[in-house]
Image: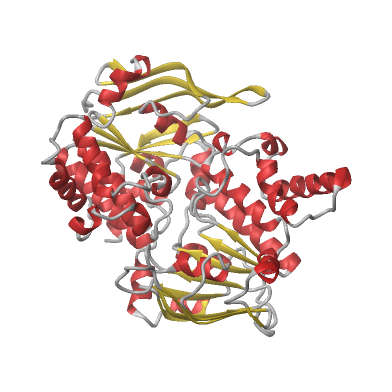
Amino acid sequence: MTEHPPALLSVRALTVSYRVRGGPPVTAVRDASLDVAPGEVVALVGGSGSGKSTLAHALVGLLPAGGRRESGQVLFDGTDLAALPEPQLRARRGRDLALVPQDPLTSLNPVQRVGRQVAEVLLLHGLADREQAPARAVELLDLAGVPDPGRRARQYPHELSGGLCQRVLIAIAMAGGPRLIVADEPTSSLDALVQRRVLDELGELTRRSGTALLLVTHDLGSAAERAGRLVVMSGGTVVESGPTEQLLERPAHPYTRELLAAAPGLTPRRYAPPRPVPTVPLLTARGLVHAFPGAPAPAVDGVGFEIGRGETFALVGESGSGKSTTARLVARLARPTGGELHFDGREVTTLRGTPLRELRRRVQLVQQSPYASLDPRHSVARIVGEPLRAFRTGGPGAAGRRARAALVAEMLERVALPADTAHRRPAELSGGQRQRVAIARALVLRPDLVVCDEPVSALDVTVQGQILHLLAELQAELGVAYLFITHDLAVVRQIAHRVGVLRSGRLVETGDVDTVLTAPAHPYTRELLAAVPGPPKPAAAQQATT
């Protein structure tokens, strides 16, 4: 009989709830139990709202405001962390166990250089003095896979790509030499190439140091490749757990089978409506250039493309390729330093005042981060209704307010959010729910063009499919066009009509989706395609194909 090593982390019957304004507490995690042995990699998988991120934050004592442990234990090496006073827990956090949070854009201090943020952990735990800490921080950035770590240590988070920021968070987590790292969706916003690199680096670091890893993710493919055991959550409860191979070969719970069936790959298009009849382009970009002051090269360098009415044009590329900068230029949230933008036959690069305001009514944006783009002080109803108020939709007075409220309720229903979500605040929602709020806000004005900057990167595969289907339905019904910014070629295959591939700010390939993804002409496109994870396979099947 195989003997299992004693658990380093043992969670027993943990229940966590959130206080809700104007209502009873909402239970986010109910009677959850799991174990992680020393040096083991365990994946906690589940969809948006399943409770996995709440469980992850409860383990390290970092629940958001309103969250509380109702019952259960979090035993770390025999000590119940949930019962420790905050000063004692703070002393162990970062030293014995550490968290890699989900969103690097909101997890790093924007006014501190990244090297200082890594060094801070060393100083707090007495692992280096002020003279030693900066050099040790550079070493940790190097270990986490940050290129040119000495230069990067002197930069601020906004000067780094999402992939580099995520590596900085890994360096911060590793700084204290913890025995357990909890990685909460560490690659959900990264492209396939950078995702693979980051997970490889995190895995290598934990193997080298003997650190255990609890990988929290909605990506069953990544979990299956890297974890020895899987723990599946749904509706706040653990519905199934066991060795990875066993769960992939013989899933016992219907939800696990649903996750397996929905695992993404380069599947045939499922959501994109028929290609629209070619017309005069709605948007034309010609030779777009955008250079940031002091940068060695432009972030966008001579990019040009067209988008027709009712068409979806996707821009893909790895982190730092210039995708999001291009999105901001098209939405006129930034002015290009070169080139031209034409919208509906009119040159709009230099618009100001009322004409620019009217353009923004017709061109809306879904931003990449649902954590940074929603005002935490406002209710969902107010957030979604904000564009309606800004453009005085429905008119003044009580009649106008009722009309706007009806439009908000309709849009929340269309993005598959329950009606009571309208009265909640962003902190009370999962990452996937927050992104659906952001999509509702962009669509409520019924614009001609929506710039979708990674709109489904934070969503699990089942909810991702719902959102893609929703976007396709609205496109077919309203004729809305999409500029779809994404790092996920599997999503491109399902939603887009045409695609452009960006690398280092330049378009290296563009064309019909089917042609580009089945017969790519450029080596970089072929590299991106090779990095796309397929549906997870049992270990035996994986070995047979290698």
